Image 1 (cartoon, rainbow, N blue to C red):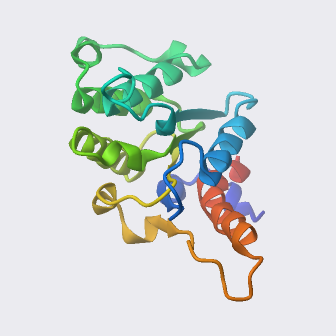
Image 2 (cartoon, rainbow, N blue to C red):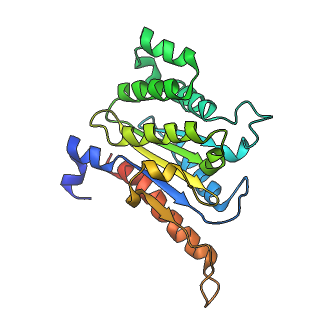
Length: 224
């Protein structure tokens, strides 16, 4: 690692914060190969010394919004906020009346605003890893508008100039159709759904492309 990489340059940290969408282009399964990658990422950072905060939500576990009250983008944001507040750095967070009102509101847009305010209070020496798997499940008519609000909010966070390094990975077992509109084209990784004619490379190819996504997510951790 070069000495320049190790320097806490604010401009460099802004460039490293990013959001990645991975389209697996496969079948709509509750648990896809991308889910495995997502679980591995969150698990690998779960034993961090506190310098890395992993946040996660698996949409495939909450598909049916008619029967599952957690199957909404607002519940997704509630989960991320709860995980963030449970971390040791939460003791240094300063709740305000405005923030409290946003949390009490329970609407997706207000919860996104609350999440933003909390993230900005995290020290800039910390890395926040946010993994949302199966996000395409929330793109149906009932939840589409709210999940797009979530992605817009997360994308704006990675482009902010202050706060911790933020790495966001959004995975889909098939492909996202709507949230793509709110991120840069370069932020999208597409995994080939058709096996090459020579055969035998589907799994290897998947893991190679998934590794690209993982490297984009955790690139900042090596500069710590």
